[in-house]
Image 1 (tube, rainbow, N blue to C red):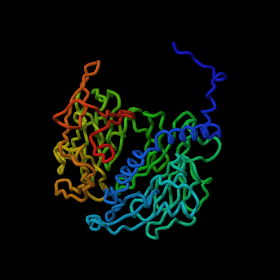
Image 2: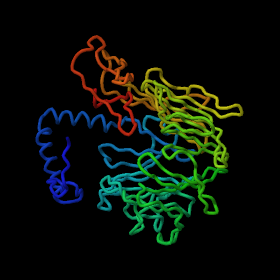
Image 3: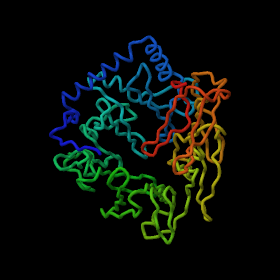
Image 4: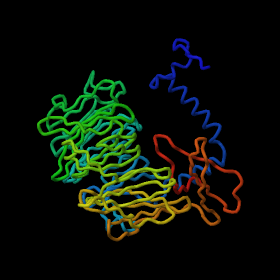
Length: 471
């Protein structure tokens, strides 16, 4: 039987003071012991050199994302730029072996100039226009960030632009002169989890303290946020809160300031693209006389759903071998990514008058794991597709739904795959579930020392991938 320890008798209670000098000193001492025990050998030094060669290779794929219809944007780190450079280039340049990159922000140079331990924490670009953005930087990788407005044309921070002091925060553009901001506004403005409890609409040139409150959560919520969808003809604003790790409440914010509840289950995920609302279920949902299973993906027209309609098309229904991984939109199509026995399958779903047409996505190698890197739903039906396997390094392709697929980049290889093979097997769990796993090695010698790895936390499974570090 477990014995409960009164906190007054707990000799290690001081370790819970994460910012305390005693706790920090204890961690430093334990780290020093580990370094002394593990890092002193010649083998360690050789391994470290080999791993750095893999991680800092100049010919790695600089995985890009679309931001506007002319540029590929990518954040790049290497031995010379360990903090990273945010940069962009055109598609024509990206096709070249050595593209001409337009450097937008050098985080190493900024950290040196300001004497701060800056770590890149992401960027939110104004749509449409793509001339301004909000860059988040953290000190040493902390959850709390500072936010600064950046001019993409001048490649410089905007003087007297939108700026937020260090805090756990959430920001989103509304238009060139307004943003949504959830941050630490002072006493009472945070939840018990330490995240913002209040979201405001902030107008350029006015004090943050005068920003208009658009939504307030409860103290025991995890946090709140707001977003704006600038899609022409479908402009919408949303507010909501996270109740816990898996549950949330969401509302459409009308021009009159009214909040309309998006009446999906609290533990469901949802997103809106133009006229469509997609709902991904975490638990069974009885609606409209039908019970949809956990793991299903449903589609309906957003305005009809808000008006009370519950005519839902089933885009995906799980089975014992197949699970939904994710979905992404292009301008006119939905790309559905599923895992069948932990192997990827990508399909294109197209809405029409008679329902949703379904067909395989072009450009997928038969034996590799494939994933969508990015799409550009503002401008068209292009997609960036990457594929890799245990024995094959990644290839990045540019495709067009219904059109051609072009290979853009290939990752370097770091080991000789000759004499190696990949086999999939199934282990039977106590309840009879068939659990798939892969074995990589000599096909003629199945027995022998084996490095066993796995991951399943946060509902995120480990799929086949190429690793120049492991093999």
